[in-house]
Amino acid sequence: MKFNTKTIHGGQKPDAAYGSVMPPIYQTSTYAQSTPGGHKGYEYSRSANPTRTALENSFASIENGKFGLAFSSGLAAIDAVLKLLKPGDEVISTNDLYGGTYRLFTSIFEKFGINFKFIGMANAANIESYITNNTKLIWVETPTNPMMTIIDIKATATIANKHNILLAVDNTFATPYLQRPLDLGADIIMHSATKYLGGHSDLVMGALIVKDEALAKRLYFIQNASGAVCGPQDSFLALRGIKTLHVRMQRHCENGRAVAHYLANHPKIENVYWPGFENHPNHAIAKNQMNDFGGMVSFTTKGNNYKEAIKIVENLKVFTLAESLGGVESLAGHPASMTHASIPKEEREKTGVVDSLIRLSVGIEDEDDLIADLKQAIG
Ligand code: P1T
Image (cartoon, rainbow, N blue to C red; front, side):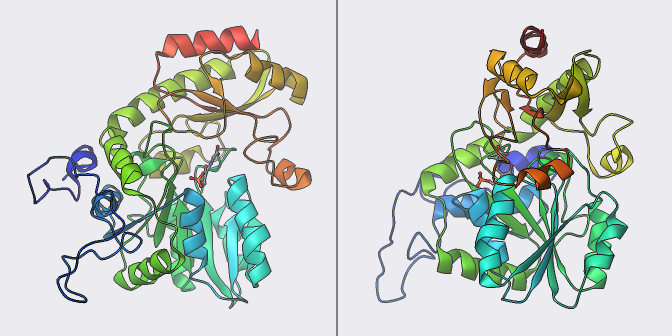
């Protein structure tokens, strides 16, 4: 089955009871048993729920994995991965990543004796010198949030395999429409399904996808034991969202391209971060591992003018000033004060998250309206 068919049919079959084409929303916490342990595969909805199972099968299918797991948020999914580790273990992570992921690593897991090294991974060979006997996990976001740095998944997987270290890739920005990290050698894919997979800004959810059965069993154990699962209603919404992922992504990419080029030619704009530009430092890797360049675009104002940046985000009318990304509607964010506020200023500025940086999640509206909105807001 090809990708555009998998988004609709992958891991799905009509419901056994009445043949309903969409899986029913099994709004139940528990299931009748004929005798203790005598059930039909479901006993309690933290452990498993049929609507969630349908979604988890879809996750596995679209990412070319074997096992999918759905969580109550993206951070809950990351939390589950980190719980594979024990005190003394080390994690090597991209230094440019979602602020909440950084906060989870440094404010929660460091307290439990897990050590983190945040490094630039634009050159994958750089990773090897940070590996010690205690390194158990490499955490990669690509494209990174919000600087759009591209990390070579295949090269990173080769290094991780050589040292017997797990490689997890946060595939939130790219989605499997653009890149499939398991095919490139990663062990775990993570998603904030809140974003493109859900696609309509109406739910908060996380996903993990793996190929290896032993690893899947360990993650299922954590999912059930820690309990950060999503409900059946949200599972249904995410499944519905995934069915249009490919058509939405196609338009996100087209509009993202138009917006990136418009900004690049604007005299009041300094830098535009979008991996489709030939002069993007990792353009060659992006071209190699992605099918297109996505709908996320970040930029700074001329002279890193903070006041100008705030004026722009306040002036936008079609773009909504809001956290999050990946929905059908266009959003604008100010990472330094919003999504990345939990990263200390000197840390975030090292990776380019300066005070004038604006991040756009380019939606699927008409391209002309988006460009006109930017034009009036930037002036
Ligand atoms: O918000 P949640 O579903 O818990 O997902 C966290 C998360 C993980 N990884 C990436 C790359 C993300 O972008 C996010 C969430 N990000 C935002 C809310 C944001 O506006 O960037």
